[in-house]
Length: 249
Ligand code: FPP
Image: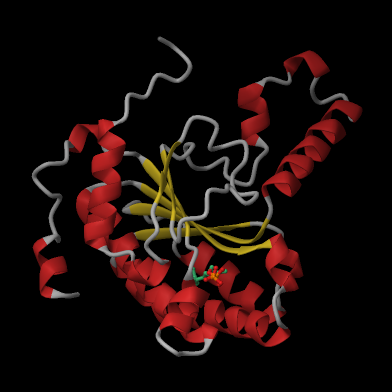
């Protein structure tokens, strides 16, 4: 942590603790461009992106935010060059293996969402281990979307509900928003209040399509590896200035 960030270890005084988002979601974009600007291979941008993610997770804990969800790999990301995909899979696995002890010490409950069956076996093993071991942790809910697609999540929920209707477990008129949400991958965590996207792209990119219905969006030109506590503070200040009406006047 830099000296500036050490100063931000505690919740900054200009933020209202009562009005913090309960759940922050992040689209961590710009790792490749960050690396290119430094004259480095793209993969080093991802490695640096992990350091950023670790500090933002710790920052959420330090400042009293109870849930963080990060978009690590979309269903579309398989279209990247094979060596980059391989690097990312190995990186996820290594990070999980290396960070498990610290997640236990810091009371982090990690949860993965997405089509996990299509991931390499050894990664699935680490994912399952980390989810099982951290299951009872209460400090912060950390969700990692991996091989995740928002439309696919909605289709999967429809399928599960249709099967229950077919089996006579529920009647069609019992299907409402709350029942639907309980069939999403994210049923354990509340909807995000704030969605941050780095690197200036103005898109949702198939991320948490149902869940971000009323989230406040914060888009910054900063590339993900440069997104630090100062930037996060700025995002939270912007969030606290928003008037959240949820469709009301
Ligand atoms: C987007 O940048 C970033 C990714 C596709 C990968 C993000 C993954 C991590 C930071 C690792 C997370 C690890 C764990 C275990 C939770 P980009 O490559 O699209 O950047 P570009 O738009 O500049 O090309």
